[in-house]
Length: 229
Image (cartoon, rainbow, N blue to C red; front, top):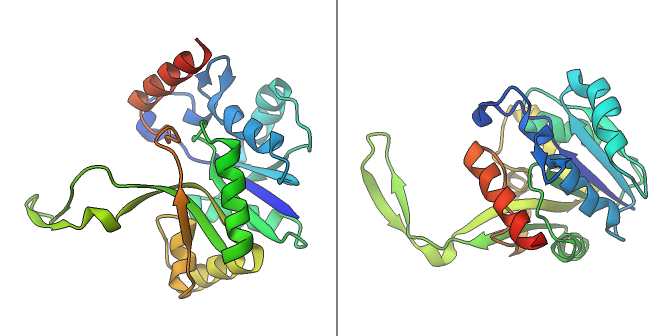
């Protein structure tokens, strides 16, 4: 069984909009709806768990879910204070018979089905697999003073994306270990890395953008317009 946890529990402060970014309109649908629809049409996904702010549960039931048609249904899960807490809530909510878990940011609406499937298959083979893209620009390490400390070897640097897929027993152990240690990682893969486990990274897409600020939304709307034109 493959369960998907789509995380859309952020407050969207950097978007500087009274509406949370995951609910903002993108071509007639909320941003998160585009992400959910890809997962719902993926043949490898059995169940979807959408993690949203706990105070938005009723709002989503009345205003978001009626806009969508689901093949496998969708389960709402209340989020936590931080993204890591929200993913953990999702892990607690899924069926413990789940073999593979795939975690995705709800505000990455351009994930492609083939990339999603490759990530899941990679987790089945390696235990943990994420999408990413090689760094295209020169990468600098900058100190607190604002001066460059060194230039990093670009050929070994990748920019992590989601989805990130894992064997269930591995990712739940990684999260529980982090909670016990009071550790907060920048993504789920970093928690698995702390256990000394290998994480496979495969090519994602430059189109798999994360909508965080208003400029990202402008780019996303332009991308959709180009796709549908």
